[in-house]
Length: 114
Length: 114
Image (tube, rainbow over all chains, first blue to last red):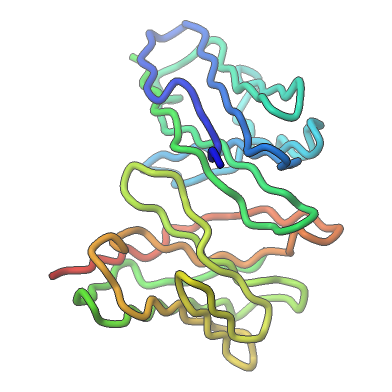
């Protein structure tokens, strides 16, 4: 089975530009998580969806960040406008709450904002 | 969620058992102990979790003390590919009706050497 798929794997953009990160969770999983990892702050949860509905977005740093999950097989994390301090690795993870609670992480998107 | 304390780094010889300790003295009765690891440039990977009984799977064993204030992750025969950051996390199990956020600390950097 394919794991969590993220695209792009690497993104380099200039400050002020819009960035969209994409995630396809594991088929059948009904929970999806977006994380951000930096050297300074470690791995932080940004937002959590259950059955396509945002449940906890308390980790979203500011209004420049938004996340959507239009259906069970796709989610996006958008940053607009991007800033250099947004440079990080962004991970998407999914889980099936009904059967197990471990989260399966994607390979991440390395974002560099210049 | 309860806070965990782990050593910053550990070394282990290839083929030997790696024993990674974790203190979680403020753990609550409904909090599970989870272990994840993150190999360089990859997303975190679930290893094992437990409540109060010792657990074993194909990857590792988890030993939880009777008072549940500490635990040890055991990799029985460490290989070079086990070199990673290991995270010990306590959380309410999301398999029930509660949402258990995964809060990653700094973890233990395990280096397996030949």
